[in-house]
Amino acid sequence: MANDTVTSEPNVDAVVLVGGKGTRLRPLTLSAPKPMLPTAGLPFLQHLLARIGAAGIKHVVLGTSFKAEVFEEYFGDGSSMGLEIEYVTETEPLGTGGGIRNVLPKLRADNVIVFNGDVLGGTDLRAVLDTHITTEADVTMHLVRVGDPRAFGCVPTDEDGRVTDFLEKTQDPPTDQINAGCYVFKREIIEKIPAGRPVSVEREVFPGLLGDGRRVFGHVDASYWRDMGTPEDFVRGSADLVRGIAPSPALDGPRGESLVHPGAGIAPGAVLIGGTVVGRGAEIGAGARLDGAVVFDGAVIEAGATVERSIIGFGARIGPRALVRDAVIGDGADIGARCELLRGARVWPGVTLPDGGVRFSTDV
Image (tube, rainbow, N blue to C red; front, side, top):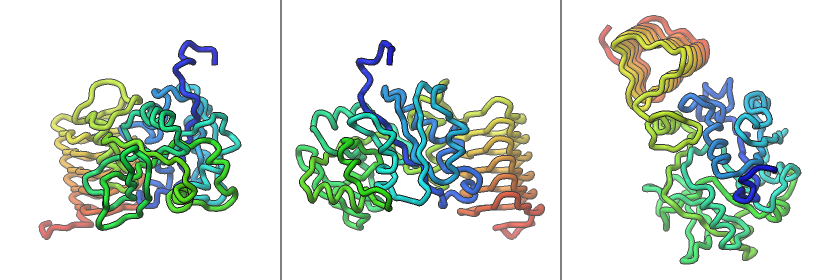
């Protein structure tokens, strides 16, 4: 710790829970865990790790489970990002609370900021930590205001910011403040979570703390926030990063309608808009139209094809004049010419669809 910024670095560890299977994003997550899927050209988790580093936090523990080895292979000890990353693997699913308790042996600091590895966020992490310190909270929850809170757990607070209740999804929420999946714990609270069994922070730990009269506070803001669990949200989150709507210290250079990575080939007349990402070595044919597309490395979009709000997996091919809209195409799939894949269609890895083999319209 012999650097000049030591005085400004918070005495806090970061924990990122990345153990989920990502079932809602299949077939992409059959080969890679969700936090490692390319998002604006980088593994999704890299955007969060960059935000943690930018807040001055150096020590990060990843709570892994599904395809655990992939994380360490990519990030290693974290030194390339100026971090010190350690790994703890769950052999059986332990839930959010159990996952936090499971990393306790690696924690060093008195305060621990915990992240759900599914969330793309833009909140000021130093401000969340400041709220935790100034309120002398046992736990501080990041709460974000959303337009329609019915799909989320709602968390009302009193005039001092103290949390008064935890409400599951309800059709008539009393507040627009939702649990944003980022918490600051005093270490002693983590020590009290039961070890070795599944525990939910939302259903067990937090209600228990309220029942015991512990100090649970909310840090409320209206910062960028998106749960990246579904293909629709994954596509929108990636596009928001490309266009600069969602912040990420991991991305440098100007923001715009598209992000094309080195080694990709874009033929004349191709149109790339809506926050489209084209991965390394991908090929986009003449006259192709990509609007809000996420094209992974090595994929090929042939001439005249249209890809809208869809994810095209590693090495997949979209044939000439095909239409892919609101769909997920698995790694190595081959979509024939003039095929139409719409409205949540999912093509599994390696599947071949013949020319004109799947249509929604009646013309040939």
